Length: 130
Image (cartoon, rainbow, N blue to C red; front, side, top):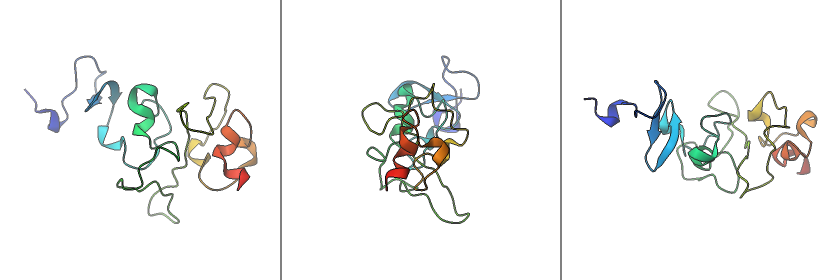
């Protein structure tokens, strides 16, 4: 028996992943990445089952008191993370199937990227409107 705090996986999760507390259908490699204030823009984190990275990927739902504080830092300290917002409750929302953002962390990072300034990419997460 391996204690859950030591990284045990749930039987229903693929090997190398485990569920996060309160999210029984969310299987991720590292549950501590959820809700840490840094958007993990790709699946399995940024999915409905994982609460869209527990709110990290939308400006309106990211918790500024979280470890990374929802800030894209300058330099190499960490980030930029951006806001690749797929949660339909918070906008501007992104059409994941139609937005061909190769660098998802650039969407909503504060800098206007013309190639992502489309309706499908949520107008670059609002970056080009500022």
